[in-house]
Every structure is written in structure tokens, then in C-alpha cells.
Length: 447
Image 1 (tube, helix red, strand yellow):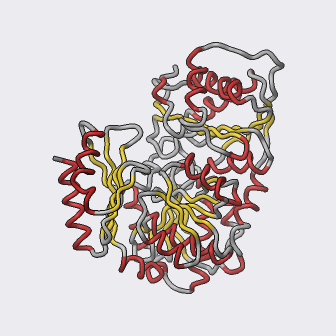
Image 2 (cartoon, one colour):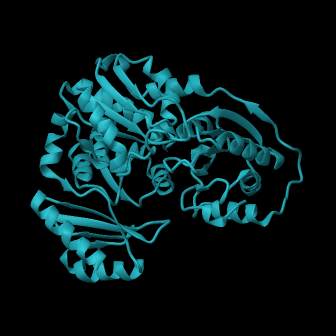
Image 3 (cartoon, rainbow, N blue to C red):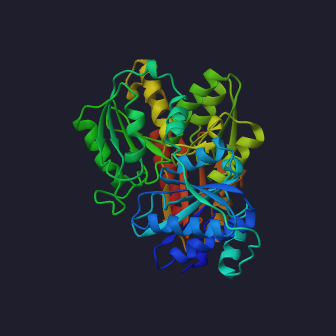
């Protein structure tokens, strides 16, 4: 089974086996190799119940088309990126559905340098080849060899911080029965922190909660546990552990824009004048902080394919997205969940203050809504309505959806890639103005 709708803007994702099964996975593996003609690739998988069989099928398809496959086994998504970049492979495939519910399966595809394959960079060609059923192989069948990427990966992520500066902080970690439970132990044993591990057992049935910390209901546990343990920090990971989310010592969730601002300061201290990329949804806290620290702030479309390409083009040191994706030039421009975890430990330790105190100046100046999603019947018509209503109030941009900056408040509205939804992010210079404009703009969207 291979339903064409499983091919999304940035990856492949669908329900197993109704939309994507092992036969479909084999076809995708073969089509990927036929399309890009890599000689050596890495293939890994997450902890989902279907993933071992799906990985076997993808490897079978890739090898049948002539690629030599390194089977790196049960890993987080960033470990595929790392393997491709560090071993100078010509591509890689991660079998994962990231933070989706348990019935889903999927894949993330990359080329040489861990550059993602998306809708605008070959994924639709892979789809067409896989759907056609045609087989174009003429050369010999490739090999499948197991490869241990763990020791080198652990050394690389630890190289982003000075472990000697990290204090014995008390840290609650929610792995959500996802890949962080497998990835973190060899890192944690090298750290002086007092970790409180929760749901570290990889279990694709997700018995405790879905591995998507962006949804408030999935954050309830980490917030409660951080307060109960009187911890310095709470950290929650998504299913494939390429994103992590933070809760401060007061139990308050830390928005991705504020995390991006804090990390930007770290990289600009290391590399004065560096370029830092952020996405169109972000708080003004991000460009203000970057420029205040002497860096070059570059706004960008949402999505890892666009962010990574821009990082390469301008040689940016770091990039952050509101959604909790953080990208590092010295990690093949790829996103990681473990590196931000380490950076936050180092930041709190070096500053010698509680995270809630460090965030105080940002929370007192920037008032943000977070992302608010609304189903709409006609997305283009509603975007036009919003432009007509607010276009005269400030600077208008169509870089990604519709952005309007009216000085003391601004917003971005983007259509979903997969559903008839509009996603609103709005910010103002006071809580009162934020709430007033939030309700006003939502009123237009929902009318």
C-alpha cells in the first residue's frame, strides 16, 4: 500500500498499514536510490511498533536498486543526519513518524551533507517513481551492513558544551516513551546533573501520552513533575527526539522563540558577528537579541528544508524555529534535540541564576500568543480578507503566509500544509494589547 497523500511538504507520513505498508516502504527505498543514485546511505528507525519491519523493507528496496546500506538500527532522527554528514555518505533515510500518534509511520529523506529531500527538492519525483511500480535498476544489488554510530555521535554532541562548567542541576526529563529514552543515557552518564528520567522505555504504543510536547495536554506531566521535584529545569522530547522543549523552575513553558534568543547569544559570544536565522512566526525578541549581541538576524520561511538550505547559502552559525527545531552549522546544518538540552544546562550553569530569572527580561517585554489554529473553509479567501483588513496598518510580507508588522504589534498567519487550517502567531508590546489584537484577528479568521 502506498497512498500518494503520505508524501508531505517535508517528509513522508501516513497511517500503517492503511496508507503506507512494507510494500510501499520497499518501493520508496528503491525509488529514492533510482532518483538520486547514491552509492552509500545510512538507514535508521525509531521505536514505533511497525518500524523494524518498515526499516527492513526500505533497506531491501534501497539495496535492490544498487545502494550499499549502513543499517544504524534504533536511533534518533538526528543520528541519521550525523551519520550522513560525518561519514560523508551520499544519503540517508530515517523511518519515523516523529511526534504523530502511534498508528502512523513515515520517513525523512536526506541527500549528501544531510540536506533534506522535500517537496521542492525531489520528494515528488521519489513519489512518482515509487507509485509507478517501474523498476529501472541495471547494475548489481547493493549490500546491507550494520554500523555502530553511537560512540562518535555522543562525542560530537558533547563537543558543543564545556561539560566542566555544568553544575549538578536537578533536571526532570520526559522522553515520552520515544527515542530520547535510548539516546540520552550514554550522554547523561558523562554529565554531573541529577537527572529524574521519566518514560525512558521506548514503546511505540505511547502508553503515557503522545510524544508531541507542542500540545498543552502533553506538557501537563512535565510541568507537574518539574514542580513536584523542585527541579531547576524540565525537558520534554518529541517522538524521534530531534526536538526538545523546556519548562523553567517555576513550571512555566519556555516558548521556542525565547529559547532561540538565548541560544543566539551563546553562538554570538563564540563567533561575533555571525549570522543567525529565525522563522517568520517568531517574537521580536529573536531579532532584537541577535542584533543586540552584534549578530546578523535573517528571517526565513518555516520548515527544515528551507532553513537548512539558507544556512548553507549564508553560512549561518545557528538557526531556531518557534516549533522547537534548533539547527547547528557544526552538526551538518541539521536539527538536534540533544544539543539544545546540553546548551541549556551549560547556560543555566554559567549564568548562575534560575532559568525563570534569566527569562524575566524577555517575558516582561514581549507578549506572545503562541500558535493558534483555526479551521477555515477557504484559506486563500481568508488570507485576502486579513490583508485587506490589516494591510494598511503596517509593513506587509508574503514570505510565508501573511505577515503584518504594525510597530507595537505584529502577526503572521500561515496555512497548514496538510489541513484546511490557518495558524496565527501574534505579539504585542503589552499583555493587554496582545489579548485585544489576538481576539480581533481571530474574530476576522473565524467570521
